[in-house]
Image 1 (cartoon, rainbow, N blue to C red):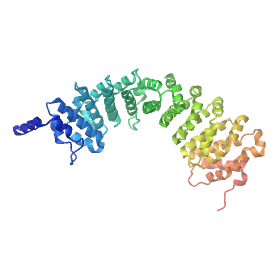
Image 2 (tube, rainbow, N blue to C red):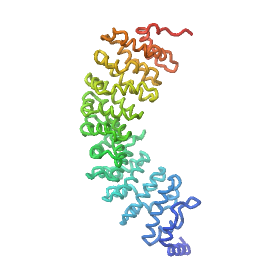
Image 3 (cartoon, helix red, strand yellow):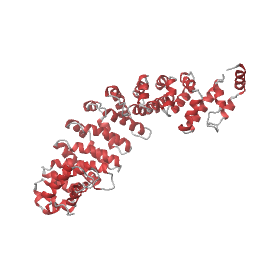
Image 4 (cartoon, rainbow, N blue to C red):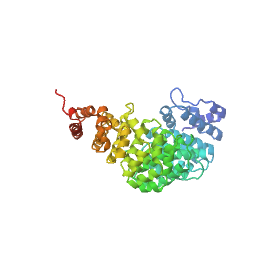
Length: 474
């Protein structure tokens, strides 16, 4: 800078007042730039003027859409100076700087890299564990935005101590604070399953104890709902990395997940995340499933099915089908739980989507494995399962059709007492439910290319409904 320019800048700085800075509108100029007086004020020797400028820059970032405002702030060249304020002795300046960094880090990857290249991550990690909850909250927010950007930046946060800071916050004994809730969200961002850069189990398993601790201690209320959703979602993401079910059970989180599922005050997303975790458990062996049953999962599923949410229907039926696919005692437990009525209702309601109707069909088809037991067959007949399986043949989902044929075949093989009573025999009920016609629809479908399934339909028609077995003449 030449001498004349330096004199001019010095003169302008000398005349710039705190009142003038405070009066600048918290927006961009007409040509989309940060007001030049703010750039000037940032170089002031007066601490209060500099602080007012920083607050004004934060307000600009906060008030305008990120797509419009982040790049003009980056273009000021102030990002390294703003990041350096994270080391300030002034707590308010640290807070404002963390807030600014958090806003810039919700932009593009290139914009986020500007704060990283200025050394933001290590500074944020240090502030994240501050006893000042507001400062900690803003620092964690910034870390979360960086972590959520991409797998590459996620790894930078981990390498520079950001994830260890989150664990420290989550392990605090106090009731959940804003910073702790934000740390749960940040952890969920860290565990995001990037397709090409998924984290191996050995890198994330250490997060299990602090997440479980948070889930166990945190009450279900409006203030905590979102963070509980993220905590259980994070747990589910760890399960997805092939966590051993024995390790999952040892955390003692299963009863708590069942409580969250059964609690009518739980949000639908929280129930759904709990269902995914519990579904992972009951897709293991019979011993794993018994842990869930003993924790009360079956009555909890009834609560979930009363919510009327399509995703909840799908996840709850998927979980129930895994239990019904277990041993005879587990199959009987499903029948004794009262789940059959809502499952059949979901299956037969054409307003429900194909995915949840498919999962409902799967529950019933798994229950038909007990067709050697007269009591089970009678329960299934009284529960209108035959009508439901017939309706499932017309669901636009191949797996639903396969499971319907499986269940129908099992019930038609039954040789119990009711089979000889014309009005209540499976054959009579299936005829009344248009099953022969629906089997023909599957057999003759041009959209369905599964020849084995079509053959199974023809075999049922030939053996049990011969009058419907012949193909129509063209």
